[in-house]
Amino acid sequence: MPITSEHEPWSFSHALYITNTYQSDKNATEELLIDVENTRYDFQLTYTHELWHFNLNASLISNQGGFLDQTIEGWHDFFGLPQGGREQAENNQIHLLYQQDGQDIINSTQSEQGLGDIQLAMGYQINKASQLWFAVEIPASNSSEFISNDATDFAAWYSAHSISKSSLSTYGSIGIVFPANSGLLKNRLNDHYLFGQFGLNYIFNPAYHFILQTDFHSEIEKYSQLDAFEPSLQVQFGLRLPTLFESHQLELFFSEDIFPGLAPDITFGLRIPTSLN
Image 1 (cartoon, rainbow, N blue to C red):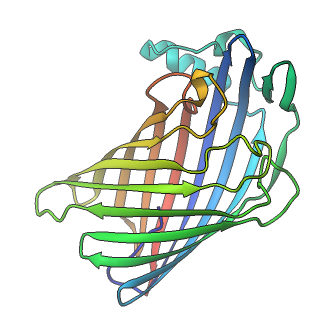
Image 2 (tube, rainbow, N blue to C red):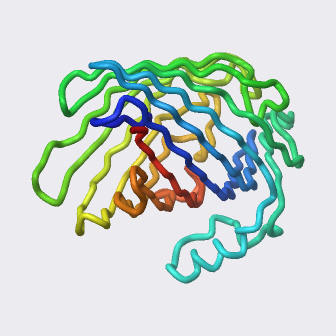
């Protein structure tokens, strides 16, 4: 979600996400394997003028075998979480596979990196607590279909937060995406899908805020009967340090899939939002 500042016209953020995924699913006609570690750096710039917000988000993306597989297996064992077949696979390998009726739709064991799609968004401030956003995502390169789908996607969403003087506040959004009919899953994607999030922000003291957030999206692939393509639900746990640096905040978080096999296993992230004086 684009950042905005209530006090400064310009704001930006740096964010780093490391997502480790192992998903394996199979039925009589389909087989899916996602074994990959994705690293993503996002740079986001927002300009606010009166009731309007203008946002740019650019990403550098890397898909690798990674180094976190054994650590995550230990994490799941320690908390009694299901491994989802992860313990039976070789650690730190990359394999992206999707077959239907014995035919490869996706089959890659290659590491790749590059500039991801660029998102341009425009938001309107409805009132102090809510905004309406429209966005377009345009391809920045055609080096890999795993990095960019070489097409234009559209999205719209409504976001809101509670205005409260207490230590607990809420925020959320709900929206719709219209993906392009191209790329690796051409003619296989739904014409649109829904997404949303809901979060709680608890102010322990001015220096420490704790965040609990859920993220959802509806079914994206329209021809598959695999459980892995069903609607996804994840939970995020975060810590915000709003006064760590002058004009800077620091957000640390990790996410877990609520229903194993329907979302990436775990994501670690850090984000540094900044206001420009």
